[in-house]
Image 1 (cartoon, rainbow, N blue to C red):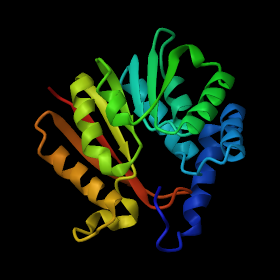
Image 2 (image 1 turned 90 degrees about the vertical axis):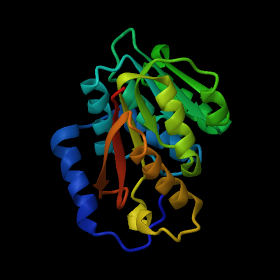
Image 3 (image 1 turned 120 degrees about the vertical axis):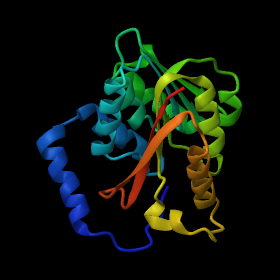
Length: 224
């Protein structure tokens, strides 16, 4: 989660609303997901509707058949990604909090995709070590101090050509602060350094603004 350090421009949210009205349409399933998350006391840190659709499109563009998500929360992004899978596809999502996982499973069942989604509960670093690849698409959106661990595990589990997306990498510009003692900033900067040093990755990062404030994603392809 990124804490707001400055008041956001109100146009950011207005533009997100315009995008949703013109391009996304009404999604009663995902509205119910957000309502269930709020009722369950989950933090309001899901990706935005426009960002969720972006993940969906990226997974489709990648032709993903096996997706690994690190950080389920209430399943909003999980549902967007699973909808991109073919009927024989599979998504594995990792969540440390049993309550969050239970809420997510209910949302996933309501969305009619429980047959292709498995939510595993426990510390992601430990669960990742038990998994076998290959996976075609990764979405990493969990505790930021462990980003480098998650990246290394994604590389181990990836097929050549796999896509890796990492959320919350701009942190309202605080990624620039080399002296920060915020473990989330330290973990994010370590992620950038690890990607820069990894010859198997071709990557960029994209800043975003909107209802989720000023942040961004790393986008990478495993090239070998």
